[in-house]
Image (cartoon, rainbow, N blue to C red; front, side, top):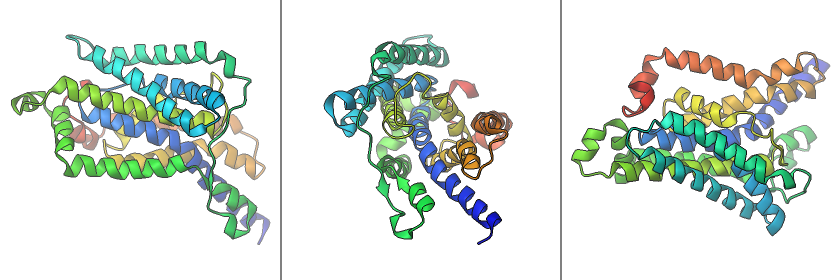
Length: 308
């Protein structure tokens, strides 16, 4: 194999492995936001859920010695923030976008305040599933060390797609998000449905945060999220509120985030910071494209404040 072929193979393997790792928190936050927006509510506060979930997961794993206990605790913290968001937004004349921004500040601020004591601590990490050891190629074996949460996210997307398409409760959520008047006529408790959807979405975002602190990068610090919760909102719009497409969009964002480390893996260091900006450039491009997309406007839940 020539040097060029070897570099190309290394770059491909690094991109695949990086896309899987980086996409996992995007996947959970996007699926949570997809559920929330399907009910007719936007939650811009999921960045706070993600950061608080990362801190709570790390602290819980540190004290209990169990990384999976940390994952559940992270989900619980997201559930807590989601409940606050949902209940506040149920009040008359409350703007869900403004509440989301406030909750983002509250969640991140609470995480930074409570998490100072854990920055230098060492907590148990989530174990990966080694799918590539049989290949005998070290780089490929490393790339195919996949965390179980990645598979949980894929199964969750499939289950959520079935839920929206084939269940009565899925129809209730979709009706609530598409037309509040029709939902009221059917006797659906709109506020309850939206609060539950927002809480569940917050739970998933918290689980996504646990991946950041307990697996990749695998530590707790105040710059851990880098805006992934906000980028996931753009991802949902790009995926046109479809759970399966959210997975593919998360993989795309993950691949964009893996460009910098992948280029380093083949010895390209010039322009490293530009490559690290790829996810943010992609977010900007997707938001600009989605804003002009007739397909996105047609498939958006009718009760979202962004389409009114």
